[in-house]
Length: 242
Image (cartoon, rainbow, N blue to C red):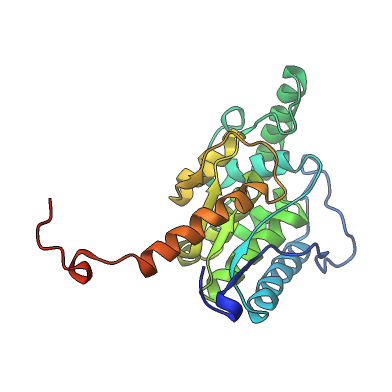
């Protein structure tokens, strides 16, 4: 993407703990809300601030990435909550768990949904009930980029789940997001369909950590360059258009 300093740069957010009052970890989502509303809001604000800092530094495209253990369970719960999908449809194998573990994981998502009965009209409450701090921060990051009119290139299933929360908070923000790839996790395809985003790549990737978004970045940059530099028929003097 062009613009900013030196013709424009793209950046992923650096790891930065959200300013969550009282604790740094989320709770068991089957026993109660994973986060308090205050923690969820603080993490969203941290994501917004990170996007603001990166754009202020001259970056003209923002990329998401995440690292976590078992956060695909939370992502599946968020996806079900915002899309209405069944746990068995949205829950995947994550790092490649066996059938018994997948069945348990699906049951955990179902139990969490039954306990919290998510209200999509209260997206922050849904985010607090099911999300980790990383999901809340990613939601804020996506919102922050959109507020500054900078494109945000989303990564995999956790970013997709976070984007569902962000879109529920501010539907217009989704116009600034692009899907870098389609994850092998089934919930990611559901999230992208709900958001109306077509992935730039579909490589069956399961690994997160921003890898899919990074692979898609050159495609996005090439598309932007082509739109800017390739002549139209009129500019090229083409009169016969087959």
